[in-house]
Image 1 (cartoon, rainbow, N blue to C red):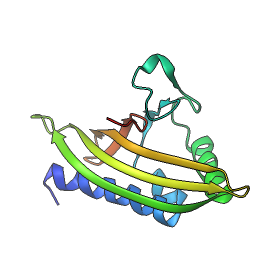
Image 2 (image 1 turned 90 degrees about the vertical axis):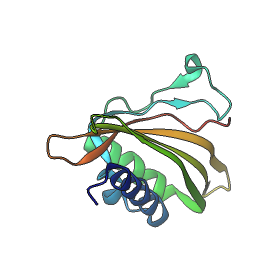
Image 3 (image 1 turned 120 degrees about the vertical axis):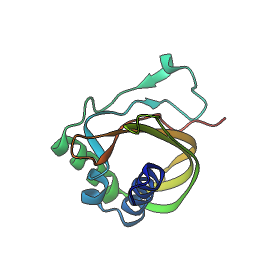
Image 4 (image 1 turned 30 degrees about the horizontal axis):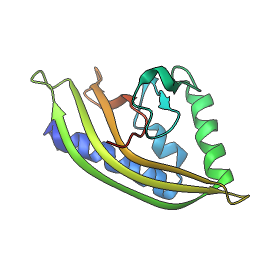
Length: 142
């Protein structure tokens, strides 16, 4: 498991398991304490001028509550994820993964919330030698 590409793949797969099982504690294990997560208004908003940043810089309690609220108020109908590319810096301390996703949530009123397209998950290696996701683009169709 020393291979950085394998470590990044494990993190992507762990995050997928967290969504699949709606395990907020598992989801929190992939996130860096300095993470920021902007989102496009929809999957065609390639211009970041149209993006939003609802939660600000990572805050364990606030982010955990936000994801738990999603899990409690929505049913996960579909969560398909496919890693398309993993790149690691020559210094082996930074990496990104390109992942195609198709995730569908439905709330209690039947309203659909679909995340469909491609994301770029950006990772940094911590001083503990553990990788954490420090940023992710929102879901965009290319």
